[in-house]
Length: 435
Image (tube, rainbow, N blue to C red; front, side, top):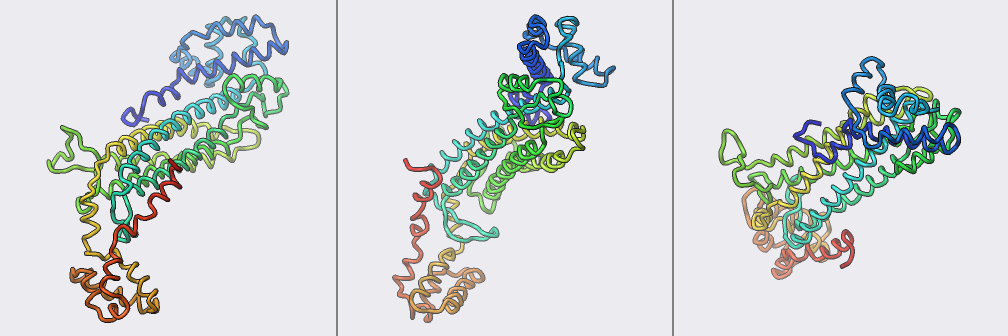
């Protein structure tokens, strides 16, 4: 990813320096295990650790790869230059390139997942804080973009919290599934390397041994991982779309924080645009873009091909770096979001009580009016509000068919906003628990 949409901690997970350091650790731990099994002398295994504090020369590895056309061999050649060719002659004994590449990739994905989980904890904290802050801030709920019935801004934040909490659970499960390693040799039969080596390496690298690998770790694990990232990205967009709607001039129920000195348009000085959430919508598309290629990587030829390799070299860093940035940006947006309760109430009242139509409908049916007739009566008066700007309560009180069933006091009672918020505490308890 370009620096504009990157954060240093996640970028470092995917740096060449980090990758080669992980490769080294895999190889060195494998040497320790093989030496313990008596495959070769322990002093050779100990010699490999001379490279523990050495900075691997990325340019030198690239130079060797330009000749060998093989990245793992290039690394092993450079490692031998550091350790000594005689001391390093047992490195990679019985292993194949995928043992290093796949195990490293999964180490990187688990580290990336840990960063993303921490990001989500920050977002959840911001959503929870804003939910309680605006638990009783009444706003109009919308369906199809049209006024429906009253809700609260707190419930809006709470449902986003619940969605992101589900996403956190999905990501945690995806991290668990991806945290496997394989040191099983060519076609995965352990013919030239003892399974105990795999067990030792995985333990040292914070992974579980892959129960059965071919020459690669099964890619259904990776498909599930990137699918989980795609769902998180879609939820980010879900929140971003709501904020973008609320910032529209005709709505203006909330807006992104506009800092001192910030400019909204090069042409129109008055503009305050939802640029951050628009950006999040675009970034979500980039993360989801990786899902289908990850799914297609599941189907490999026989025990191994490398059709997945070029895909993963791109989507591994790109999706995790992008999602890390997006989660951090969304957290900041939510944390600083400027909310306008007065505008929310003004919008709710824009159509002069129309949002209470269902309560009147239900009240009529409870008084013995058929549902079909009750709907006709309420809609007849509602259309006067839509088309003539009339006051809904006034029209209902002036309709003899309505007043034949409901008194003025009973009609007025149906316009109580508190009716719509009476279960907010119960919903919050479901989402956030008691206390």
